[in-house]
Image (cartoon, rainbow, N blue to C red):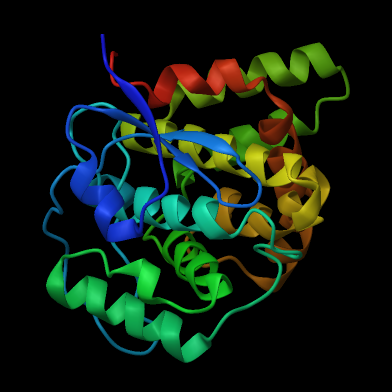
Length: 254
């Protein structure tokens, strides 16, 4: 059986210690215990740096092993949970645009996740994570399934609505499904922290456009306006699903 221990480490120390151990990161003030999967060695990713550059598809940054979550996502969440869970407006407030751009360029040029504990403002780390999710070549829920997610969230019968959403989640590619589960569990912890003042609705406002996105690569203005409320509904539904449902996707034994 895997050992568990509670540690208070910097991001770089944290990554170095994650070898065959389920590590629980203990937040200094909130004492929030949050299990985080191990980050495997960084893998290659395309070099596309410059204004308006986009990342490739999510699976290109994720390991084949379980859970299939990009190290960048795990590192950002680790850092945010260590020092952001008592910050009012977490994810709503913007950090430094210039620093986010620098982190992005460093990541794309070196294929390595930047050392995030050296980033002074935690809102810059949340900005880096949001930028990654927002600028993937296709949204986390994929072009193929985004419409199904939005249609499911609009079904008035709650039981039927959630049933359709569970089906769409199971249809996601493994990396997308595992990463979605990891992010939802993280955002549920953010919502549970009263200090952040970010309840499920507020988080859905931020992450609807970022995680759900649109069913087409270049939506016109009407589509963007039409999709906005539907994106929020999808995120609210995902964030209210039981955490033990999402847990199955982020444990290593799959």
